Amino acid sequence: MLIVLHHSAKKKDIENINKTIEHLGLRPVAIPGAERTAIGVIGNQGWIDDGPFRENRAVLEIIHVTKPYKLVSRDFHPHDTVVKLAGRTTVGGKSPLLVIAGPCAIESREQIAASAGFLKKLGVPVLRAGAYKPRTSPHSFQGMREEGIRLLDQVRKDTGILVVTEVVSPEHVGLVSEHIDILQVGARNMQNFDLLNEVGKTRNPVILKRGLSATVEEWLASAEYILLGGNPNVILCERGIRTFETATRNTADLAVIPLVKAMSHLPVIFDPSHATGKRKLVGPMALASIAAGTDGVMIEVHPDPERAVSDGPQSLHFGEFESLFRQIRLLEGFVRKKLAS
Ligand code: PEP
Ligand code: MN
Image (tube, rainbow, N blue to C red):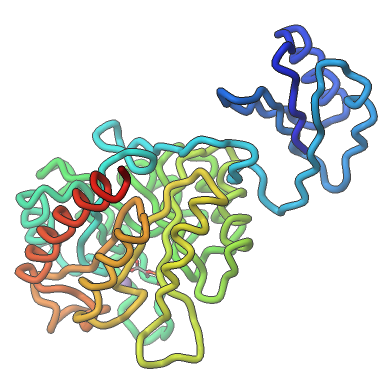
């Protein structure tokens, strides 16, 4: 429920309303905004009786929000959320387009060090690489796990690059959040609610990927778990969805970028690698997502894609990534400066 107040409402009125909300066993949420003063109400499991508020003279309007997500919605938070990445860069709002790149998986010290060195030199702020790999087949490479986290932490210290890796189990969240800047919840775990609750207890930025067949509403409801847990630093990531089409690994749903940005204040980024599964499609789709208004892109790149243990066919060679990175920066300048004005 949203309680919209008259412009003339005083601090005392707000305090009284907050007290009433708490008295009902619910939680008030201050909603910032230049145009209106409002208080959000959360913690209810059904319809809230708005009687106690209707009588209050400071109240202009009461809006019942029936969506399964509230904290992530623009109703409760009209302005763009800008997520800080270890105090060094930001994503969302008017931040520069965030570029995240790296191999699908950490395979060896040499492979991850070569990737980090190459990306750092180019000016890419965030290195991605999986230590725990949720693979469709149990016969596929499952990741270097704790050893992978150690290697990623080492390149992070050696080069100063920020790092993101996937967490697949609530028990790993403590260790990973200590050694890694940004956590990723993968498509297969988008509705692993214990995991969402656990990453909600940290303050690390969390990249929440859209599930393979998740609706936008389900995706936003999953983000709500993390915000409700107390972690506001969520970055949504579209990575393609499962459709009847098999010519591409997934179907890139670029329409959700402007759609979700209108529904939610959270930053939205795009992963063209998993969305297409094909190296040749990664560049064009990354550029298309920038035109669609994405806040960032996450791209798989590998020192030797032909020998990659996972997702080689969609991983760019260093040279390919370098020229795409140049195009991304050019298009970003055009879209942000020219199209926005
Ligand atoms: C990944 O980023 O390597 C990954 C496994 O992605 P997704 O969860 O989108 O399949
Ligand atoms: Mn991958």
